[in-house]
Image (cartoon, rainbow, N blue to C red; front, side):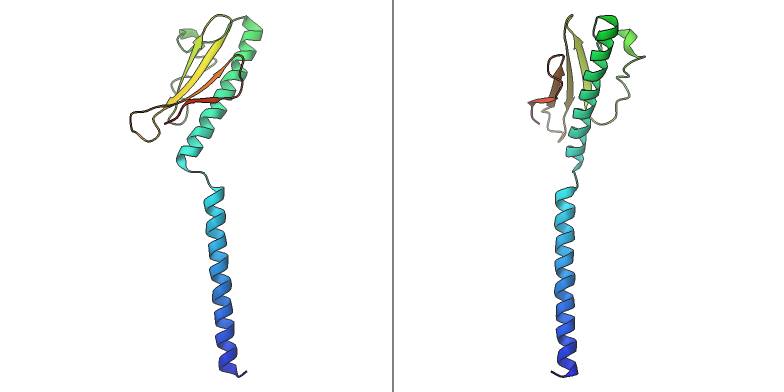
Length: 129
């Protein structure tokens, strides 16, 4: 081989390596990053799990659950400044509670609803958007 052929071979090999690395980077980025909707869902699930933990602790101490309808819960749960697009409602039913997270993620008028209650600590998708 002469010098010109060596340069062409090095250039073609370098181009193939760069293109392969770029494709690998794009694939890794695509499959490891979350979309805005996925982040909002994760935040809602985490918030519902936190509400469940707080409810259990409050029930252990006071023998009742907190409700978002009561005016005296602002010192424990702040309903109006929760982060994200989901809105949270907690319903006290005496010996149990139900917490819901609702949001219209794609603005089509249908709401996605997640639920957690006193017997089920893991959030469950009730209605998909």
